[in-house]
Image 1 (tube, helix red, strand yellow):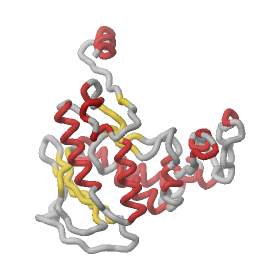
Image 2 (cartoon, helix red, strand yellow):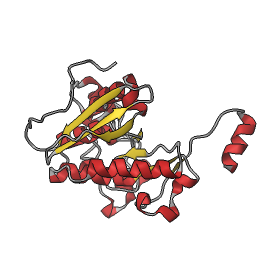
Image 3 (cartoon, helix red, strand yellow):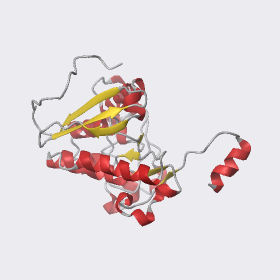
Length: 251
């Protein structure tokens, strides 16, 4: 409140948007609930749930957990917006935790960009950077490689960098050119999210589509736009029955 009041003296009528970082399952600790003072908190459990679903090829309780947590957030703060993410600078890279499977990395991006909350990307994640913390945090903090021929600015990492990762193909330039690259999956789903208010700022609710490998939910915006989201985390195609009439285009 004090930070916001100071900001408003310079920018009347406007509010800052502050995101808290609490290395905790904050949704299960109501007495230490950071939404009492902040509009948004990084949701570490989101990534842990995505990782488990993809690596175990099981939907588990991921969707029900997300919906339940969001209800608990808004019970503390009506305007709560969870900051959803995959990994950050203090965790093993998502690519490493997903076995460097590009298919899993692409689906993790799709799940992130179709769920309720404000998505946050850790630099390099959209390129498929890998790295684990065992030898030091530097291994998960490699700077961006922008061009195919240029080098990443990793001089300050004290040699703790995996140069085998920094090939031309992982660069921004190369992935911009490759239509099916991981980065272009991020760009495509970001564009879709920004096209439909239901995805950009909607609320999640259960879609009740059965299947042990099916993650499904509805996203509904304040103006009534409704989008059905379905992700199959199995290693093969699945056929599911969906409720209602989905033949109508979303408006």
